[in-house]
Length: 428
Image (spheres, one colour):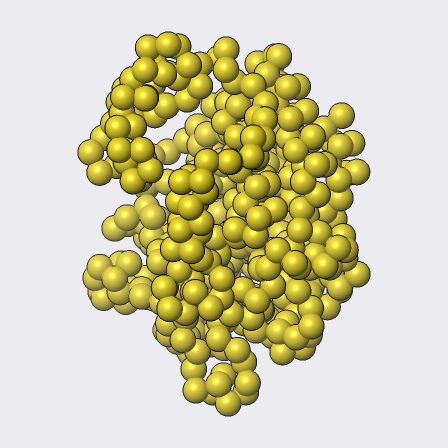
């Protein structure tokens, strides 16, 4: 990529390293990871915007933008936004193509960001953290430890997202693994989303509480697997269960296992208890309390305990830590089902959950909103939907209805106002 812009780019990189401007880990893994480069500490400062005046570079930038057009029209012809075909029944009902009724709102005239406010906040956050390593954000790990996030890396990423949203380069695309919809907004740090408006109006997001544990209840329902219930695995066109399990007997055995659990009173009580916890949106709270009571582990917030829950759900069966032991003790039958789903590969479970999430969001919830309120802009962010403040009741009602039809119970939701005042007060 660099060579297409500067043919002898390596000479510049070597020179910058020699002069102490850049540093490198000088390490790469073929086909997996490139060498890493970053500014030396002396040069980790806030960015200054300098207009491009070089005619050749401007032309190259214009050509690049034309080749990488992520508009709705370009998406159809260039496959920048993979579209999922809808059924004949949905065509007759007048439901627009999946994603297109979402993509039409991703325009710079509709979605805007307070550039000055966002840049000032991003600069302030970086300067605040840069002076004291104790202020660096922590990324919790499965084993209860954490790694520190480099504030300059966060600052650069934030600035890049501000610029993308400002210029309308939303980079809207669906991945071909779990079929989630990604954009500059899904990649934007939460604190910077507070500066985004829709049609010049403030935004509120409606979020499914403890989404992964909530969606997990679908996989505990035998009727989902044997396709006898209201919500069937065959309903999801890209679920591709056989290829995930790599063995049709594996799926058959899982169905038998779930049927056996249904006939076991203790197992039924356990699953009902699990459903009740997630239905009240209290799973992370409860698990956090358990970790404190049984292991003496203190977590300041649910954000810190989430990686421990993900360790339970998504790590290899051979990996065992304290959080897994607590979960296994509390939900032994559910743990057995999870272990069986992950028997071939640990990634089976997150793939299944996220594909189910994508299907419910883009095949059910978003089309239902578009049919009910075609005039209402919406920004999906995986398990949440943001819209113009004042319309959150209709969004939550539709999300609740569609999710209830899949889960068999009414889930819990949270709301979050995108407000710069909230961001500044939290930062303070």
